Length: 309
Image (cartoon, rainbow, N blue to C red; front, top):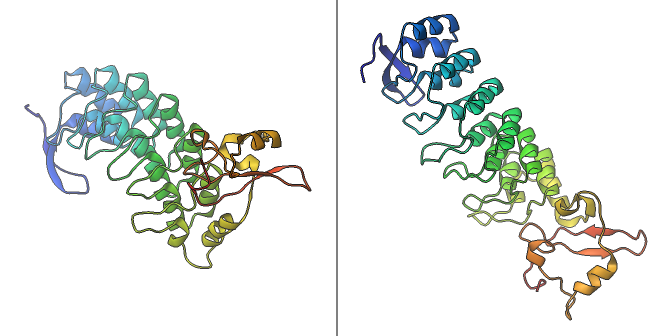
């Protein structure tokens, strides 16, 4: 493809030289008036640089919403992929531009583009930058919560690695799997590594397994510094009963009657798995009725398959 009015340009951190047009320049710099003139003079809005970067990629990467609108109105391909497989929506999410994300989705951008070995999903990108508003919008538009990237894992992994508690809360409330594993590392492992007490508490409240072991056979607490607040937090959860309302399955504080429990105990006093509701890889859950308060407690313990039928 012939590229007119092009000049050498250094793009990206990895250092590949490419050429780009005046349309690319105007889009990236937010020069809406100049971009409009170029479009009216017949310049292509879908011209690509050597690395398959389109003007729409450039505008989104720099959060230039006005230029994004001009390009889309002129027929820019909304789901074009660059050499790494990233779409303009990925770039807009990376930039944290909610306005650009809205424009792209309104023009048919895919919230779940097919992943490649070198690209993450728009939701991954939004979580990486800590853009919780973008995360909410993507989820509302059907973004896959469990989209798996070979390098990053799930979006929840990304949010925890990058210490973005707001994104973590949005994902968990939307139903993200709290114990999703990448190389046996769960989001809680990452929260522990980063010494994020609030994040640890949030993950545990949503059912994170404090006994999960990574590929080095280490629990989340093993990644903390002895005596640190995060270590104390995890150690507390290992020995302390949690109030039943903290169980993600009973957020409204509903209590199980003692008759229900007795009916489901077998001859050995074991609880059935009930498709993972009572005993799961998340927590080993036991409900007991206290004689003094008449309420039930959730005991967070290691998952013991010998206890469950």
